[in-house]
Length: 126
Image 1 (cartoon, rainbow, N blue to C red):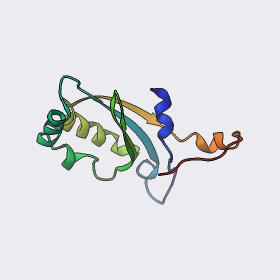
Image 2 (image 1 turned 180 degrees about the vertical axis):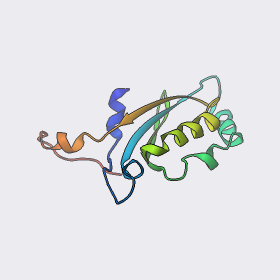
Image 3 (image 1 turned 60 degrees about the vertical axis):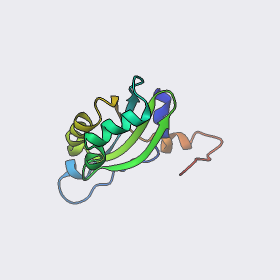
């Protein structure tokens, strides 16, 4: 599963005037692991009833990408200020639990360092 974090493409270390904690961005990879005792329609019903689509992602948080990982569930990569980590956690706890088991992984983009070492520098971008 650790190799799946290689899908993460970008990390912003953008710093602007103001509070560094609010402008320093981090990446967060979230695995939403399907509860296999339910089918997709049942999972969707739980998410909808719990308000997932209205609460996630919280304001100030951007989706970098969202993948289906067959046999596991879904993998979401978010970019957010560290100060929004609590909001992301609460949104997941309030609206995704029951439909999914969750795993959270802070991630960063290693590609800029690896690119210099690779003979084949081609990179997929969506």
